[in-house]
Length: 490
Ligand SMILES: Cc1cc2nc3c(=O)[nH]c(=O)nc-3n(C[C@H](O)[C@H](O)[C@H](O)COP(=O)(O)OP(=O)(O)OC[C@H]3O[C@@H](n4cnc5c(N)ncnc54)[C@H](O)[C@@H]3O)c2cc1C
Image 1: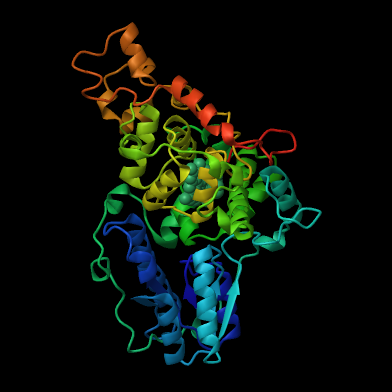
Image 2 (image 1 turned 180 degrees about the horizontal axis):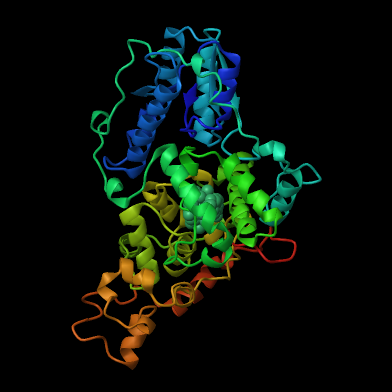
């Protein structure tokens, strides 16, 4: 059983199949050098994975009666390593769950071919999403490009059968003893990484960490609709990193949210919608892999973005949370300090980079990819293409978030801003959304100097808005939009 985006024993489809069909099962995870080598040496995701693997290994040891059962973890290139171990252990089948990112599909096709040369089968299963690939199609059998009709078709197709828990803790006696030549589980240092501030964030990796968050969120789910847009409130589930690495089963979450939504719980219905957005973006990537690097709507690649030293300076200010727009800065600092950013703020920060600073969405996408704990190619690309209007069911280009009014609306007392922009702590609530405006009418608090303690805005929003409308002038038409003309906010 080759674990990848599914670091759990519970309700794991490929694992359930392996344990049902084989006399003996050995689990393996590859810390793939092709993925890890380019990463900075301190990366919270690597820490999360290493801790989750230790938990998975401990889970197998606790669960299997076989003495010496446990996970093999290798730091190697996946293609070579999987074939090496499959041959060494004389396995008949390698089981894995689907991973539909373009690079992963290429890796898997190489593994499959290499295994086949030795007569070993490669058997893969859907596990990471509820509906994948071409499972939800329009009446004309084509993939959906607009979310709302996709969601309606998704809900129509959905039955309780789709969320039946997989019996992956059955047959514990089938876990094999770890082979003697397998090395001890690696730690961060042994794979060339350093510790990050992960342990200070109070987040537990592995299935136990996921379960604790899930149980907490289940109680809060009814309030999700009202609370989800306010970053200062504990309104979201914070499960994204666990969903990314599969430390919790998506089926368990959907089963609960769907059942609750049928009882009329609006919070559950809205949260279920978010999980459907996740499936939506995965199927977009499956059908349109060119979105990795290109605009979904090709016209949008005609847009000329700001480049050169001045643009680089603006980009750096955005990355560092030094734009002078407090909500944008708080968002970017939350990302830099914790690896998480609230969904509302992802939209605001992304829109600001593209539509206030005129910088190519791909630069922001890459920055998020490097820093988000929950970085997921399909969701991140979908989010950036939504914000830049180049995506399938995106914000129309002429809708431009105003960072000040977004701040007034979603952080009215500036609680979130104060948490991440302590330089403004002494300013009154009303000043926090646009301190430079406040300073003109009343004066800055004693001891605070705008431009010294906290930057003045690096762009004027009204002027930037006009420039963006001009910049997007090359885009001839919005070819794809929702039937009612209103595009959903993800
Ligand atoms: C520019 C931008 C970049 C983003 N990058 C990522 C990313 O790399 N990885 C990622 O998982 N999400 C991404 N999102 C979507 C969303 O912001 C996060 O999933 C969410 O903030 C995670 O927090 P949560 O688990 O508390 O979410 P909740 O609000 O509790 O949502 C539950 C789950 O639903 C899924 N989900 C929610 N919103 C979306 C969405 N818009 N698209 C797809 N799935 C969604 C996630 O798996 C999330 O964990 C991005 C959004 C934007 C606008």
